[in-house]
Every structure is written in structure tokens, then in C-alpha cells.
Length: 160
Image (cartoon, helix red, strand yellow):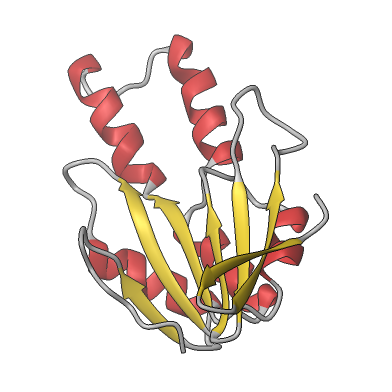
């Protein structure tokens, strides 16, 4: 993890910022950032799979903002043009989605282990059969520390 630095955000309010420059695995690069302010800490993940480094970065944050993938609905959508059967060539896509994205269960576990006080779920990767309520329920099975907010564009959430 890079050394946190301080930068003013508003009149005299220091913010320490830290980031994980990239994952230790996978061909794609993903960034995660933590901002510590006098009001609290917020952590943003990029596309990521289960990651001890992201968990450490998010430890005790007020808000964790993270992506989620509904793998069954995504894979069903990909398989639909092939009669519901995935071509062998799509195995790499499934492996990528499992390793470099968070399922609802993995997201819930990450937020729980990091002791995040609030989880904001964004960047919903799901097929037409995806169900946001089912995703929320699966996250909740693993995350009991705080609120779950299903993020929407232009939503404003106070840092508490």
C-alpha cells in the first residue's frame, strides 16, 4: 500500500489518502482508494475479487463503496444465444468474473471482515434475470455490521 499523504479538501480539513495501485492477481488492473477525513473514512473499490489487501484498506471505514456481480444471471445471459449452454470458449469469461469481481456473498464477507459501518453497492453486473432484492439478501447473510445501500446515479450519502 502506498504511504498515506495529507491534502486539504476544504478550509483546513486534512484528508489522508491511500490507495492500492493494482491487484496482485489478474490481467486487468483495478484500483482501490481510502480517504480518511475528520468526518470519517470512505473506501472505493474498483472491480476486484476477494482480496485481503482491499479488506485491510477498508478496515473500520465508515463507508465502503464496492461493485457486485450476479454471476448466475450474467452467465445465463451469455449462454442464452447458445441455447443456454456456455461454449467452452466462454470458460475464460466465467473464470474472470469469479476472480475479478465480487459476488454478493464475497462482498458481504469483505464488508463484514473489514468492519465497514455502511456498504454502498454500485456497478451492478447482472443479466436480465438479475434481482437486486436477492442480491441485497445474499449480502445481508454475510454482512451484519451496518446498513446496505443499493447505490443509484446521483445519490448523495452523508459520511457519518
